[in-house]
Image (cartoon, one colour):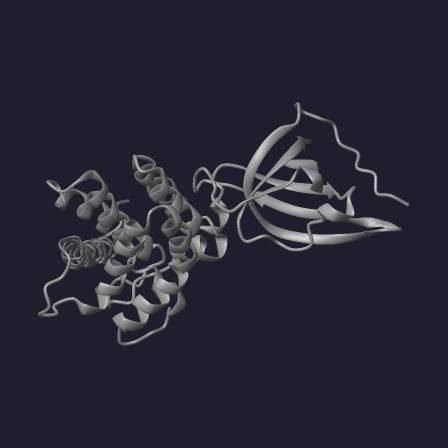
Amino acid sequence: MSIIVNTEWQSEPEIFTGTITELTEIPNAGDLPVLELTIENSFEQYEVVMFQPHRDLQLTQIPDCAVQLVLWEGERGSAVSRSDTVILLDTPDTLLHLPASKLCCPDLAVEIELFIGACPMQPLADFVRQVLGQPSIGMRFLNGFMQEPGLRQPGSLARHGLDVATRSFDACRGLSEEDRWLAAIAGLLHGIGQIELPDSEPVDHLRIALKGLGLLSEGMQRLGKTHADAAKTIQFIVASMYRIGSPTRPDPRALVVQSTHLVAAQFQSELMHTAKTHLGDASTLPLIP
């Protein structure tokens, strides 16, 4: 006996790109299981019933990437789809497929996308989208916190990375456009290894760099097939972060990222301290009748 869904269609079928956050199989007699899943992006969420008409095109687990599919929209955020309309996107066009309800600050994903969207070197922008487009990495990065005292608030890791990226791009004024963007992208992702070491005390910059290089390795291999020098530069800058203050003469782009990391962390710490002070002062004020 097959499952029948009673839905009043509100529109024509639409193509939707998002992240599957929940997936449950429902037995369907002798046919392939029907799926109940939740798919969401930065703007919308749907509860979907998905039929699987072809054994070779089954969806058996939540994919760690952006998902594009065709939806027949029903009432109150419900929809129907088919597994043979699903396309898994290893390199999404944007980062806006990440689910807003799972992010402590959804606007951060939008801000990062706007920043890398201005990059004229498409392979570099795609590198960032390939890395952060994986929900297992992107969501942890966007929700992650820095390990330095006073900066352990959710979202502070990605906020710091974006701050370092914009400062590095500006500080490299006078270098080539490609060099400015290489510094910016390395700056954006320089601390990504912290998502693998959330409780590391004291801060271990060497382990952060090594974990970060591991998370970036697949993306750098792809980038290296067409832009070997760019991949090597990003790798070098991320690896150099544990050598801040070393007497050896670094690559100028690495020096910029190291410097802006220190400056951004100092400003971020001062802003958070000021905010806490103001909140504390406000809590002691008498209530106005």
